[in-house]
Length: 284
Ligand code: ATP
Image (tube, rainbow, N blue to C red; front, side, top):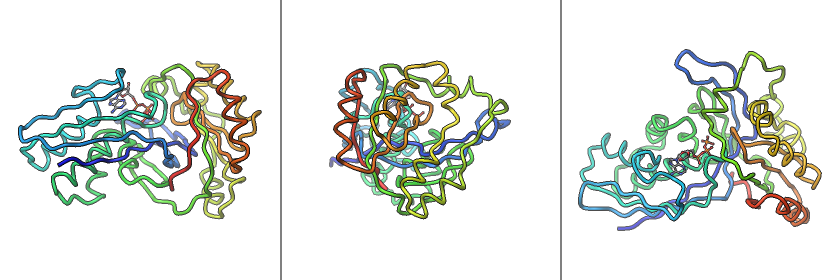
């Protein structure tokens, strides 16, 4: 039997870092939402006890370093599954881009293997498993829009955020999340985005207030080290996106746009100097 599972990219509407914890992780407060730029996983059961990963993308690991491999191994070990699986990853999400591509692949593998092997694992339990693989994986298991706290694994779902278009632009550099957090100093921050303002914007359905409340403290590090990301933000603003922010640790910049008529100008303007530009919808 073969099954398919979509693995959408995430963006952070808000990303705040409170402090570094004793266990080495950072305590964060985020609002994350999914967009409809997605990888696609094809999963086929193997009678022999083996996990095989393939992908058309030449630039990701296909061994035990791949997060989809780690998800399959975890679920097999924990639920004592003696069969194997062949997973093909059709990658569409740019890698090391701040869009949680690897985390979303891991979450899709957990969801898909739960179905393929008829394990009946609850979403809550899949999230607990996901947290062992990475801080963003629990959110990617359930998707939608959510507040994420702790190291990102404690989730509270938010219903019906204002709908809009999202323009994603990734400059031709890869940014390591670990590197950005390594350089980040929470104690030196002079400003924090307001979770309260963002939540009231979302719950009152105000697109304009949502745009005004966007904030990501990791911009302090990434924009400083990669001026091309700052330039991309400025271009997106000039071209007419109503809210502009870097996603995660970068380097992808996203622009929120309420009117379809504006999209062609923004897309064409960005394509002038940035090869990877995507126009997508928020998946709520
Ligand atoms: P995040 O926003 O969660 O920090 P990201 O979008 O910045 O993630 P990913 O695309 O998940 O970054 O890739 C980070 C690293 O993970 C890459 O260097 C890549 O080699 C490795 N990796 C492991 N598995 C995968 C996968 N299935 N897809 C993409 N990258 C993977």
